[in-house]
Length: 303
Image 1 (cartoon, one colour):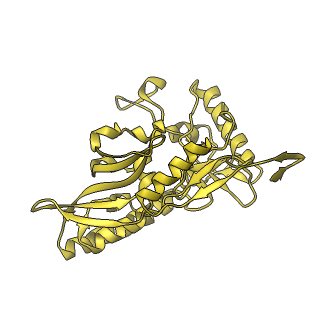
Image 2 (spheres, one colour):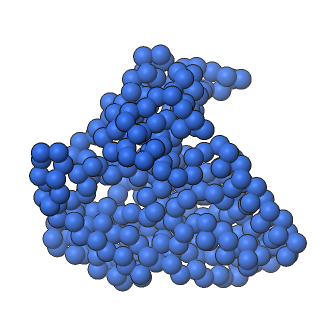
Image 3 (cartoon, one colour):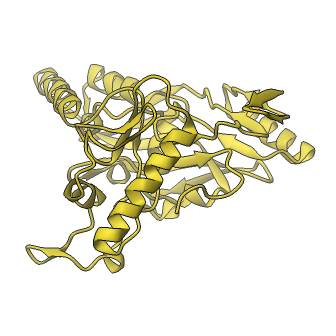
């Protein structure tokens, strides 16, 4: 039981860290048997949890096996469990002279979370490297091997968002390179991390809070293309490094990222996000929608 102000909330919180597919299946079966709501959590890189917590079973996959298979004269296949930290996978690949995933250097999270959101950086999408995956059905706990097309990947989007399946492992097609080329890729990885540290806060944030707009949601054009980037609109209204609620403040580095200065509650962050939504709507007539996953809320807390 936890106390929130004068209100007492009784939570039934269950937690599991399966280390293989069988344990993952057993956890899902238990949730079905006990009729428990489910939350699959990686490193929480793009997540905001209610001040009241989550009432149900939290599963934090710890499937961390990495395997390498020969594909052809140029490429290898790397299979990685959902619980592998993506920065660790990048380092492992470069150490084994495999190139490609370094394009996503500096992005926090696990393989499971990265596939879920289809991480991206400039022109690269993770889906460009994914060959297949093993997923687990939420209700039946059945394991299924699927190809890239099954995911219906898009920008910040995959079929996993439907909530019917969870990732157990993913396989990536990566190019074999010689040692000098791998070292060059390592240097590129370090430079990408340095560049990201200049552009984005690296701690006390839940990442990009709002998703970019879809083409049909906006009318402003630039160089013949729709202005879909939510950060553009947030920059225009002058919230960067200025707008705050309690200890929650819009980052001075990026207008679409909220930073906790130390004692911000989730409520502070939500109120700040609502202010950002309202200001964009008042100025441009469009309403930003969250990219950040909102967990433990009884209803949508945003506008």
